[in-house]
Image (cartoon, rainbow, N blue to C red; front, side, top):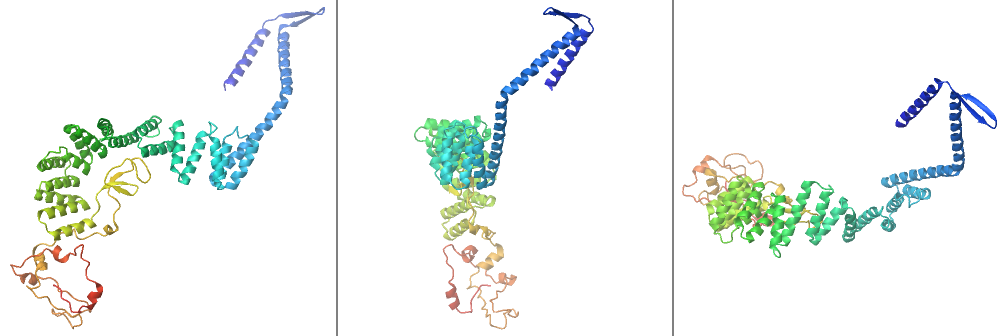
Length: 532
């Protein structure tokens, strides 16, 4: 557009010049070789312009003739290059589609038409064709040759990394990833693999530097970077807790500032502060983490912040936590544990039962069994609670890649992935898929007394399945035993001084009761006795 505008301006200027000359009459006289030539000024101007144009055209023709060999060779070279790039494009598409034969064919065609030192993609296509043909050794050699070319070095490292991963050689894979991350930290695959290697070695400072590089290159978001830094700083604090308490405290406090709701960071920071007798600041950190999400490790450290406290003082601190997070199962469990240590059995029982109502799980039943054993020593009720604990959902633990751990760890023991552990309930047992009726409310009132009446007070009726009927006059429908339903008359026949027996002890099968062997049961008489 600009060039067209400039051309129009030049034409317009020439037109104005010729018009200006035409409006002004005059003659131009030229004397040459004894002759005198006289022409008008307009004719002279046109003649000069024509001569200049003729000289320019002649020069263009001479230059074209001089450059014609180069022009012709360039035409064929460009055409050859276009054919080579077309073959390279077709080969890359074939490699992506998994057509190894076509990819190899186009590789050879492209190598003939384009020099490999001018187009590095030919090396990539050749390596991809080797992989499709199953020639992994040839592909590795091609990737290794790429390391000598600065433009292809990252591509070669990526190919060698994938080959090492395929062979299961994680050391070699991390070596190639580390070399790539040193050159280009913005590469996600290289940075993640290098981060796994650093965390596996326990090089927390190196891992922190790598996370900062990822953050500066905008490879990860700010929140994700802060989360990773908190995890790494917590791991560093745990590693230095015994050897360098001051550095451990600094790392743990920084991790807690980044993620105040991260329980391991809060526990590490508070533990470091408690070692330096800074109970007030450590307690504040734990209280903040507790308000965000109650955690048993936070509660354990908070209640035992001062080792010299009495059990009643620990119970008071547990109740303080409960006030911060009311109507939560973990709060009730914390108070119940502290009350059990203080021998305050009513409070312990009340809070444990409240925890079961809010979140029925294994730990609550086990705690209630401990309370029952410490208070009454009733082994029957203890076994009943233990059987319920076996069938109840499991308590939350730290879970990573299918591995459950009681303690938090910065990396997964299976894959080495950073920040893999999550606080949640592990996979449920198969037996828990069937809802148990053990947690239903126990019978109360007259029905409980009727079920608990001993056989000596009211003789059990003997029912013969082969007889013509049953005592109430109804005909027998089959050879199965029939049980008379409980009626008001049965309640009236129960003596007032009859000793009530807990139905759980009488009817529930204890966990260690193997039951009746079917063979022994078949040998018994068909005339059996049953209550009601």
